[in-house]
Image 1 (cartoon, rainbow over the protein chains, first blue to last red):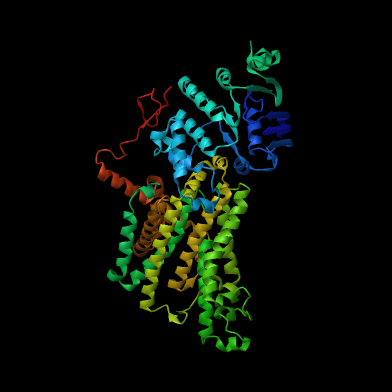
Image 2 (cartoon, each protein chain N blue to C red):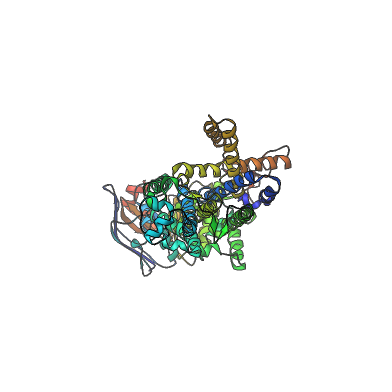
Length: 242
Length: 384
C-alpha cells in the first residue's frame, strides 16, 4: 500500500467538507474518485498534498505521515499534483517550465549553480515529445492554447516523476479530440506509479479506471469496479441519476 | 528575459559614458554623478526583488542607511583619533570619542561602536549584516505566508522606525545631523581630487560588477524560479521548492546592493544621514527603478541618473515648483510607460528593425497535434 488515508476529517467554518474518510491506494493502482460537486474530492487531494491540514485523522504515504508536512515537503517525497485549471509558469518558456520541474537541487544555492546537463536535456526532449510540444520549447507558456497548457502541466509532472500522482479533472475544458489524446497520455503516465484521478466525465473514467471510489458529502459512498458502481442504487440515487 | 535576449548594448553605452565623465566634465559635475551612481545600487536591487521577484520593498533606505552608517562609523573613529577638536575633553575621558558624542556628554564609546575601529570588520559588517537582517526578516514573514502589500508595509515601517531611532539617539548616532566631518581613510585624504577620482572609478567598477552578477543570477534557475514565484507562488510549492527561501534570498541580495551603495555614498559624500534612511528616500528608490523599467537592470541605472538629473535641473531652474514637476514626471511614466525607459528603448529598437510593425511579427503559435494544422492567433479562443 502506498497511500493510506485513515479517518480523516476537515471542517471549514463549521462546514465538514470531509468526514471520517478512509481510502487506501495500492502501488501502481489507478484510482478514480467521482462524486457530485461539494462531495469533498478536491479537498481530499488538498489534504494529501499538504495544502490543507486535516482537523483529525492520518494520511500515510509510504512510511511518512503527510499531515505534519507542507506542500513542498510532500512534493519532495514524491507526490505530484495537477490542478483543475492549467497551472504553468506563463512568463517562462516551455523549456524553462520543464527545467524547473526537474526534481534535483531544489535549494536556493543549488538552483543558483544548476547547470543543464545532457541527462536533463535528453529528459526534456523525451517529455516534450510525449506532450506534443517538441516544436514549442522556446515559446512562452502564456502563448499556448488551453489544451497545450494542460499537456505542458502533465509534462511538468513527468519531469517530476512522482510515485503518487494526483490529477484534478485533467480533461476539463478540452475538446473531444484533446480528451482522447489526454486519455492516451495519462494511461501512459500512470504506468509504473500510483495515480488518483478526480473526474466527472464517465466515458473518460471508463477508458482509464481500475477501481472507482464514489464520494458523497465528505464520506465514501461506494467503492468497486466501474460496473459495480454503475449498478449500485445509492450511487445512481445521488450521482449518476437514471 | 528580455534583458538576457538583448545584447548588452545599453550596458556598454552607459559604461562608456560613465568612464568618459571625468575627462569631459568639471569636478563638480563628476561629484554629482558619483553621488547619483550610489543610488543606482538600491535601484538594481529593486529590479531583482520587485521586478523579477514581485516583492515591493518600500524600505530599501534602511539597508542603504546601514551601509552608509557602518562606513561613516569607521571613518568617524579614524577622524576622532586624529582630530584636535574636542581633544581636551576626550583626553579628559581617556579615549578619543567622535565629536558629537562629546557634545552629547556620552563619556564612553558604546560597545557596538568599538569593532568599527577595524576597516576589515567594517567591510564585513557592510556585506554581512544588512543581507542577514533582511533574510531573517523576510523569512519570518514569508514562511508564515505574509506577503504582498503587508510585507511592503512592514518594510516601510522599519525604514521609518530606523530614521526615528537614529534621530532620537543623538549621542550615539549623531542625530539629525548624521555622521559627518571626516577626511581620511587609513590616513589617505578622501577629499583630494585624485582620491575622489579613484573612488569614482571604484564606484563604476562595483556597479558594473553588480549588474553582471545580478544578470547571472537572473539567468540561473534561481532567477527563473523567482519569476515563477512572482506569477504563481502556489504552484511553485508543488514543483518542490520552498518559495520563502527564494524570496528571502532575493530580498537579502537587494539589501546587500543597497548597503554597498550606501557605503560608497558615505565615502564619497562624507556623510551618513537619517534623511537617507526613512520613508521618502526609500520611495524615491522605487521611483528610480520604475522610471528605468523595473525588469531591466541597465534600465535602473539610466532611471536613477535621469531622475537625479531631472531633480537637479528642475530644482535649479524652477526652485519653487520643482517637486511638483518631479512628481508629475513620475505619474506620466507610470501612466504611459509601464515598462519604463527600458521598455521605451525596446520599442524604439523594434521600430527601427521592423519599420512596419511595432510588435514582433511571429506572434502566432501553432498547435502541436498533426490533426490541427491552422495556426492559432494570439488572444483568440482555443480551437473548439
